[in-house]
Image (cartoon, rainbow, N blue to C red; front, side, top):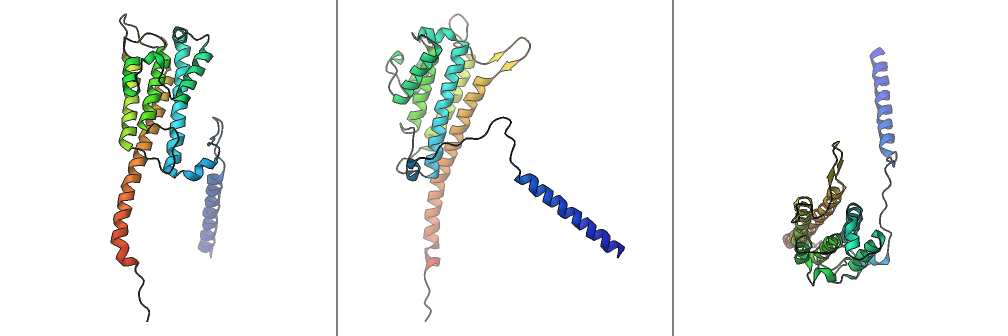
Length: 249
């Protein structure tokens, strides 16, 4: 009886611990560093697959990341927005946003688009607002890699290799921005910073990293979708014989 009573109390204790764990798992996550906010629902979602929606959200976030990079670069390189003839940093940012939204060629890039524009914007030949040039050239490259679109629907296709290549292009751009020097030995643009006391400002690198991660994930999702479509087709052929109704009389 004594042993049975002890086992009963032990089992009761385990039940209480399990209940406590379940309650802990169901408690809301902490929000001390902000809350997640998904994109608002729209009627256009009815014409989007899950991949279409993911590609649209990733593209919009990547373009927002480029605008954040533009703002950060202008703050560290105020001479750049002045070189572009803007009256203020805010005006320069509005010009970049308008150019991205219209997806038109930007005059200082002299008709260059896509990777040609990126190479020119990061070369010693370019003279002018280099921040705008790099951001707009990179945005043009991203949009080109996605078939010239920023929103995607059921009839739109995404080439996973093009998206993957875009991620590598962003990696190259980040490396050039941190390493390349002009004729005087100065950085093309001031970006990441290590202060004398060892304090590091790597916010530029982190923003580039977010873009690269989104592109890589989308490339994998798009490739997986194509592969699964082929597998599903083969499975349907193999399973056709098993899906026949059998006579019952």
